[in-house]
Image (cartoon, rainbow, N blue to C red; front, side, top):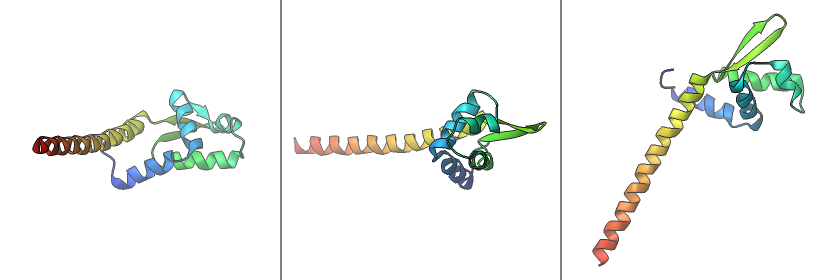
Amino acid sequence: MAEPSEDQADAFFHALADRTRRDIMRRVLAGQHSVSALAAKYDMSFAAVQKHVAVLEKAGLLTKLRSGREQLVSGDVAAVRSVASMLAELEQVWRGRIARIDELIASDTDQED
């Protein structure tokens, strides 16, 4: 998967900001599920679970496939990896900033001696 655009990143993080959607992602990354099987686990309507699945699908984090009357849902591992890559990139930025702060503190300490 190519480097996601800022709009795609916004969609990823919006989709993953919800606890139920994160749980759905964990389940569909472990294996394919029907939307009805997913819905059975939650104390909410089938329609509400469908909406959560739709948000994840729109973000590109999962795919749906029709099999007869059922809609089968699978997680998109490449999309999840691109989210992880974005987070790793942000971590490197912050690690660089922290290292620079450490250098500044060390140079201030050296100047005081």
